[in-house]
Length: 299
Image (cartoon, rainbow, N blue to C red; front, side, top):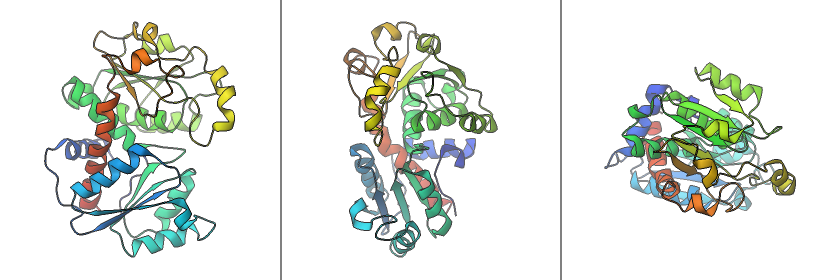
């Protein structure tokens, strides 16, 4: 049984196939007459809408489940919830806090499990990022040798982006404040995939000549108590017009959204001509459709 918990659950060739499925103008009926459970511990506008529509486009029926309806590890164990959902659905998507919950689901699931976001990874976002960059620069093959600079917290989005970009031959640069770097285990995972990320504490160094600049919120969901400390630590890490001057002439700006204007990105950049955040949001649906079509074909 194949699952998608992180980008490197795919080989580079499989990644390209998933992207091709997502970019295709017509969709296979991979979920025709079948259901998919979409289980949310964390709410999300883009994830719910993109996943529900992707399932519909594949001929299936999405069932969105709120956390209070199942109570993972309170009302029922993760394992029992998973076994129950397998009775009705051809696939399960889960948006959770702890990545370990996804691993527990996989251990007992008889259907494919898709990570719709965990504290460790955000693979569907990374697929959408690649589709957006491929649209911008002339296809997936044209991304090899180009550079993407991530500026901000070394979080789940950064990890999945680095894996995805590196697997298609992009140069990966990551600028984080001291204390917010990607972990040694994260960097070792990249190396295991043949990716050497250039890490720095200087945003200007990271974006110099870059073809894409990417950022995310400084305090993610569940980190609200750290927001003030993080704002102080991330001083100087706002992606603004002055920072974008150092990039390549054809550089674009990406953000997984939601955005906090004036913190990790200025309104001028987010709303400016280099911003591709809305095509990127649109590609969340196409990426999900491609991933689900591939998983159902290879289950």
